[in-house]
Amino acid sequence: MLVRDKVKNRERFTPAENQISDYILDHTREVIEMPLDDLAKKLYVSKSTVIRFCKKLGFRGHKELCVQLAREMNSFIAGDEATNAVVQQNDSADGIARHILSLKYRALTDTFNDLDLDKMQEAADLIARHHKVVIYGSSTDYPVQLELAARLRSINCDVRLPILPNTDLFEAASWQDDNVAILLCYSGNSSSLQAVSEILRQKNIPIILLTGYAHTGLQKNATIVLHSAFHAEGTGVRALGSWEGMGLLADILYGFVFAKDYEANMQRLTQQEAMLKNTGKVAQ
Image (tube, rainbow, N blue to C red; front, top):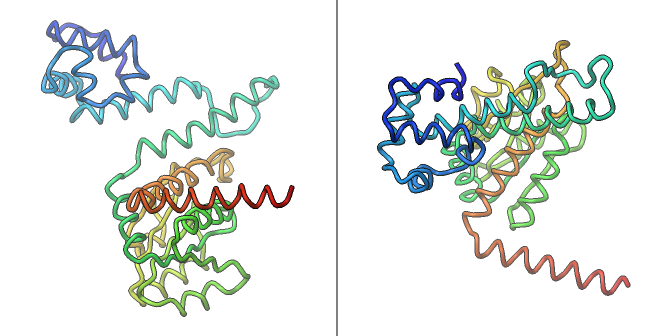
């Protein structure tokens, strides 16, 4: 049963719980983004009242309620009939564009809703502690690999990209134990990355795996696994828009690393911006 249907059933609700129900129905999006403290203050009720209400609906607490509301809202936006196919029969131009938007939105929201922030923090701690990073990726994840490398380099991380053909294994064998490895593999199926992960594990190099697949051989060698939402078309081909989830994971990981040394990193970015402006003036 949907949350909105549950809150409409008022038989067992107290007056305060009815007030919470009304607010959820009228302000669903705001509730999803609202911390527990803010929601309680907005409704002039105690946090314990909100938590009891959530448990009465079958949730462990406020956060779990918000996650479910977000999933349901995403379902409403995508439409009950939405599929992973790019084009539906007789779609209009507007229909095609909106359907692709919903696919991208779904990949982002599903990834965010299932995000393990504790693991993300552990991954950021590893990168900040080692500061030497090698990023491996499958061919389909190459754009995310390049973008993450560029962002980490911008905050002074020593990043290497083994991008030449057939060099992954050679590169992996040369790494020292003061490195940390990031593996990007949405599908989870890559024989070359599997061989790389085996070598890295034998060398005791920590591995941060970003993947969309729930069960992959890469996970057994990974120190930390961060999951993107997995969406595939009926043929098993990666669905359009599913790349957005991997990009979101990489960007959030960068944000966590950035926050580890915020003042120094802000100073670096300010200096880089000034250099770019001066370079532009000289070019003119």
